[in-house]
Each structure stands twice: as C-alpha cells, then as structure tokens.
Image (cartoon, rainbow, N blue to C red; front, side, top):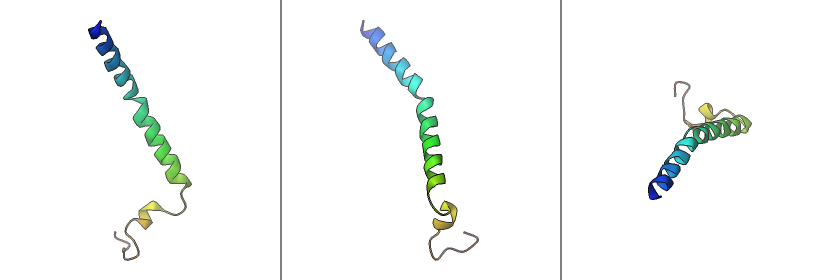
Length: 52
C-alpha cells in the first residue's frame, strides 16, 4: 500500500508541475501590464542612460 500512496503523490506533483508555472507566468504578466509606467525604463534608476 505504501507504494501506491507514493506513486499517487508523485503523479499529483507531476500533474501540478505544468499548470502551476503557466498560471504564475500569466499572473505576473497581468500584474506587470496593470502597473503604471514602463518597467524597463524604471529598472536602471534615475542615473540610468538610454543604453542601459
């Protein structure tokens, strides 16, 4: 019986390994699009040049 429980756990973890990163990526993208401003312009800071 322990082998069946272990196999069940492994299969559940494998089943969650695909949708969870996809949902996390979509949520991050949505939150990024809702944030004001441009993230690429704000990362270098006030001293950043156009090349940075």
